[in-house]
Image 1: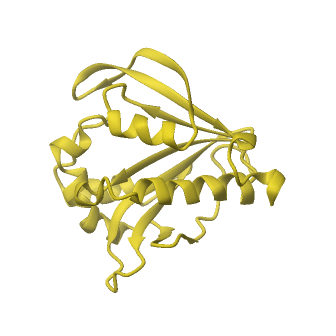
Image 2: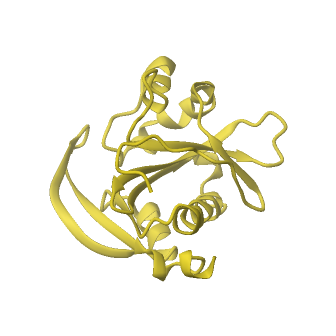
Length: 189
């Protein structure tokens, strides 16, 4: 496995209902309504985006995002292939990756995040031999915290005032998942 910061492929991953493919700048248009919405961005470490260009630059910087990879979530039945969300995995070295996700408001509660994040987790453990995944979540983001718990992540700790965001100083919950805790791991490949 390459070290932190080394470029990696962003393979296409398929589930029963979705396709995860490499996020491209053109996906910013479909994702802008979510990333510019106050409610959707409430628990993020940055405020809502005010321009499509700023979002595109953040999602897929012209120089490339050396520390991580992003996937667009596409409904397999959508002939236009518009992104309905984003997943990310950032290599932190020594077999560890941080994950992040956002699903469009109108698709939340329908299992999109659970299904697609589950597929990404399986890929990271089985194909890429990650040994540990973690997520950094605002304590007040109840849906995200429930999702991680449902997927088998363990709440490992609370970092007090870890972030200064558009909401002020915010704590952060750290959720972790080890390869042998996931049903489809390197040991079952």
